[in-house]
Image 1 (cartoon, each protein chain N blue to C red):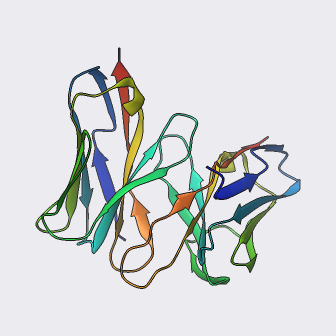
Image 2: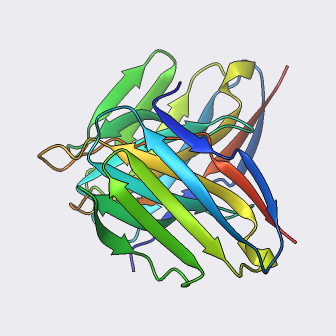
Length: 115
Length: 110
């Protein structure tokens, strides 16, 4: 499946580093999401963008900064992270059709380790 | 806030046995979706249910949405090793925001 791609797939960074995660969707969707998946925890929704506008910030610490330049690209800028931020970061997109249902398509994720 | 719980957290079954995971929401849902995540993979959409009491089947998988639209279940008949993975439900209260359940990790022993 190549509808939603994420780079890098693996990232190791120190607490003082600045790095960015990139997500790109090739499905013509209008909504994009960032999720955090830690061991033994449910998927945590971080940010939602609809038509490039942020519509949801789920009380995410400011050391995570999202950017959505257009409907196909989504970034997550990382700065001064903590070891507990180590997790799998998943990007997803959805068509945002009229109605009450919307199917999300996930990318392969970036496995982040903060030392 | 809205919470979505799933039970059991883990399930080990012998190949050929049936498997069921249950999803319970603290609030009434407008619709519910199910996803499967293989080990080392990412969640993949399986199905969505919208109507109260709705039942849908996909080969050996049967999905049900409760009458009160607060719970759902996924039943797999005669499990196979390819069914291994974590099954998540995701519920929406009418917005485009979906709350994912805690997941049920299924292991199938050959």
